[in-house]
Length: 360
Image (tube, rainbow, N blue to C red; front, top):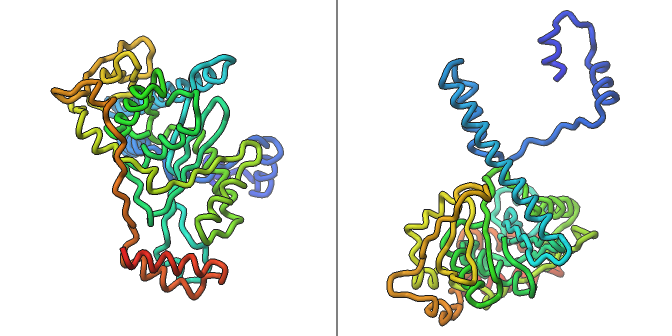
């Protein structure tokens, strides 16, 4: 800022020290934020094109397109805020649920220089945040159990929602999640589910705040085994402590197989919609909207395969997902090399994990 000031007023005799003092005393509410690593790709693309474009109709069109994108993202954010406020009203029978997968958490926490070049054990955490009670369920599992695909995300959401008895639903824009929602409604767990997709890069979910608290705790915590990650997450928030759910093999269901058996979503154009609604009156007639306006009429699409009925879904059993250890041979070799640096109290855990991974 000072350099820009000097460029604009080259004859000014104001020093950097004086400029800094005025900035901090007269504008105490202003802060410099750290650059975000997950900025919006659309915003970045339009901004670059606008900077490189000469004044004229093309530049004006780009500015208008960027403004329209910002308005859409703001409308999505306001819609989420409105829904959350409604769910917190007395006697409300609605709850807004936001879900997000945290960045991969790696184990063990070692500080020697070779760690920068070594592969570590990947641990996953899916946050399921309920807005009415400000309760957040953290579903935890490691790559020794399974990966982090659509089946895993849907299974975690089902497990977290099964902890509750009287809530309704509000990430993944795919057939697997749709199958989960249809299953939840047809099984009588919910009367209605509406899924709203925020604009990528402009979501600002409650999960983001949850993860920020975990990251702050992570900076001052050393974790060597999955139990340490669980303890770190539990201690990350004191006002509304996070509830951790350790996912087991039997918790992961194969929603993909169910969806392939009974659903046909080719006409749904799910990648283009902003909202999806499923209700108990006819859960296989999926309603969609392409905007966040309540005045837009719902488009209705039958997602059942030809020859299938609602009773085929009611008769479906949740099949177990075929889970398998995802540790590569290269990573296993790196984990073996780490054994010399593992504290004695954790040595047996890592030794057993490596031996089991070799036998798979």
